[in-house]
Length: 363
Ligand SMILES: *Cc1c(COP(=O)(O)O)cnc(C)c1O
Image (cartoon, rainbow, N blue to C red; front, side, top):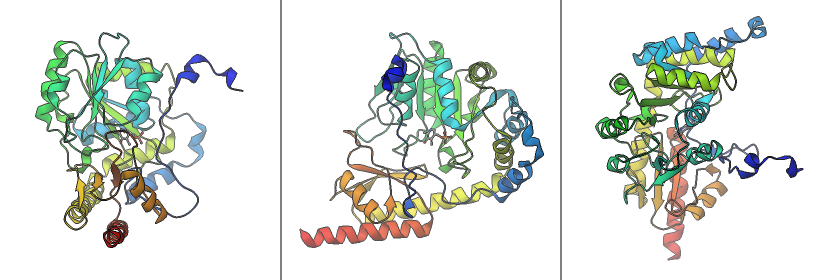
């Protein structure tokens, strides 16, 4: 009975995740999962952790994982916060650092990760969506203004476009003068963009967000983390420990440690994703008459010169290929396509090639 909902629940407009179909076997290019398996060391570590010790609560401070992250990213464990997927870390960031003054809205791009406005609404945070430019770039000048904090992904999603750190630095300096935080969501930084992590010591208002879901092939394990100055990390711990002290279970902790330390395995599979991305981009623009935004992520944002986004989405689905369509005014003509294996992407290109041929014959 809906009348049991309180006004908060009634007022929510929840995030809609990309579908995880159970009906038939699709080529899944819709949620930016990595097409390659996780490191064998991750599976082994989880197997070893699946034992009698599950009787015991996990380490609430996630010390071993924070040390592993600190080692790989060349920071201190006190500069690392871990959580149950970066979505949870982001939820804590919104709860801990943004709002509530309507005179100083949180700023993020109009075309970006669609969870940001959802968290804004959940925590009653005033926010303003800043339009990206005509060519879908984030203009750093737009964020050198009074604000209640800034958040955007770099590379941005779903466009795939990245900013050099120098552009982010201008924003950081301006916002630091006003005592505001700048949160850079680096979910896709492993696919070519420039990470801001080496600069956390120079900028006390810089917080970077990371996930094992995309670059570490572990969307199913639910592990994310934040890197930034110690006071920001302590703030996140205060939120977590007012909510759930054990957000990461023993199996996730064991797998995550192994993943974070196996740098060479992941460098290799993500290099393959980048090579495939470049090949598919070339095929789409040169052979198939598509616009493809220059991407530094593990997905591409593409527009057909012949077919509307919704039509193309439905046609691909019919052919067993799932992609993502965002039906908003500025993005309705585009599809976001995750980079799969070479084999999967050849099927994708083949299906598009046939579709284009049919349309040519008709006209
Ligand atoms: C996928 C994604 C996330 C969420 O990652 P999880 O760790 O799986 O929760 C966060 N931010 C962006 C920009 C993403 O694309």
